[in-house]
Length: 138
Image 1: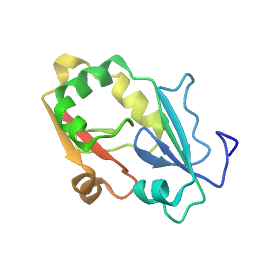
Image 2 (image 1 turned 45 degrees about the vertical axis):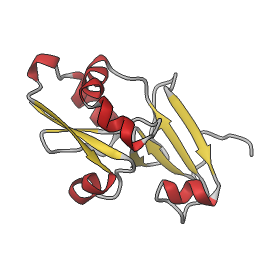
Image 3 (image 1 turned 90 degrees about the vertical axis):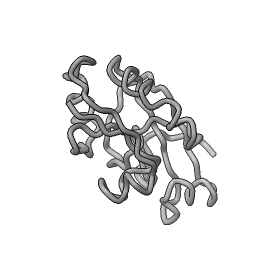
Image 4 (image 1 turned 180 degrees about the vertical axis):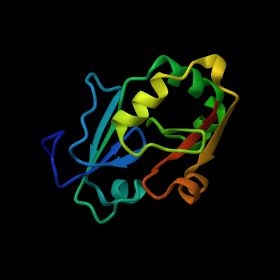
């Protein structure tokens, strides 16, 4: 299968959130994967899509700090993909908005960091969350 990172028929997952095909993610990417196998599509929860594109953006410094706080919990779900971060109970569904929001957070502002597995994250934030989620409060 040839790789077209902009195939409009695919489902796009950007930093752990199902996103529009038109989303632009700065390159270089930390991770990119294209899948079309039935097993992979089911694993990602997009079995009705012909293919999926999984993109993980490069981490901001604050994201690295947040991920370190819940590293053990994230390791237990056994994924190599980036997961989204919700701020004060709100998840921005668009990549650029999530990125902008997190870029303004400083380590000393963070009061709590909590990892939610896929089921718990989807119950609160909806089925666009694919792998799980990290909640932070400031």
